[in-house]
Length: 263
Image 1 (spheres, helix red, strand yellow):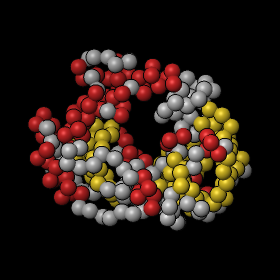
Image 2: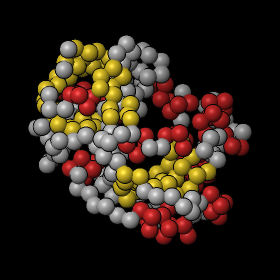
Image 3: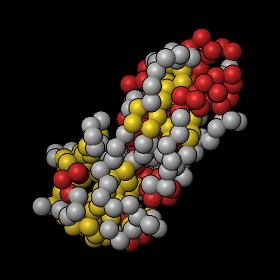
Image 4: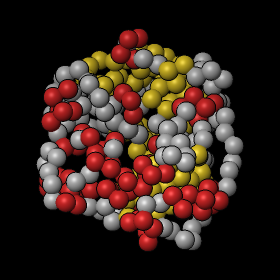
């Protein structure tokens, strides 16, 4: 069957294992059902996730104009400590920024390739952990806005990593750690203005991904350069498709590309 659509990050269900869906404008694919089956992918165009025009994708699924103009791509998205809506100060669109920034946020620890600290809206737990390919995670603090989450993350970066090694994550080169112990050890480094939001009593969340075979040497597919690819799907982890020949494809990194999928 042939599907055509714009790539956006896979939608997920927190089940065991995680369930994945590629959602197009008029159709969707339950990706788990493609495991151990051949998949052919062909690049046929671009569509900016903001303006919808056929323009080269610059970053995060947006054309260059939208990336620098639209509030959904503001610097505070990647650097939450730059959030200013709590001060009533506009970056690009104050109403949008209030809507996103002035809601409960979680600072968390996730273990995908190593223990890392991160920030997400409370409504995005555990989706954010799934997208990162974490096999275990735990909340540290719950704060009322994005700014407080951001300054907490910055403070904790001196004591724990804030990046994932995607190759180790995909190879499943991981080890279980005691995230409760990590969380408690980091408590002393939380900024004073956030200490009252520390979560005293919670437990680790464990996640299981639908992977039949992990790649020994992950080779990232550049569909923009290669234009098309065929392979047998053997796993899904984070936002990556894993193929039998060690090829991996990051859906999130290729948002905005229009593809034809033959499955």
